[in-house]
Picture 1 (spheres, rainbow, N blue to C red):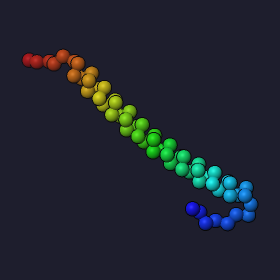
Picture 2 (picture 1 turned 90 degrees about the vertical axis):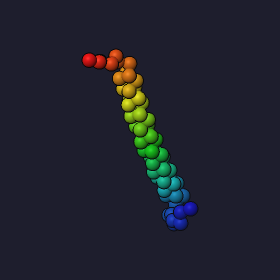
Picture 3 (picture 1 turned 180 degrees about the vertical axis):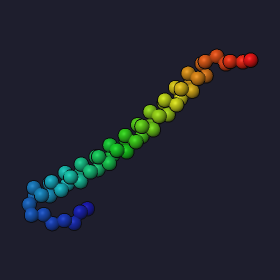
Picture 4 (picture 1 turned 180 degrees about the horizontal axis):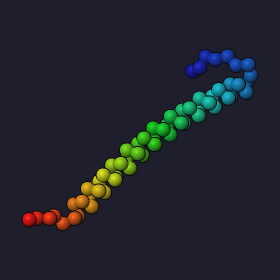
Length: 59
């Protein structure tokens, strides 16, 4: 996977831990974007529902 040469197994472990952290942060960011999108959709739908409940004003 990664062709790196390490001075010790501690360095190798640290390298993989940092790579795992990067991957998890990427996943977290992606999920946060999806949550924001769903939240915005919910807000718009709720406002449409409340708007449709209001009686129409006719002249």
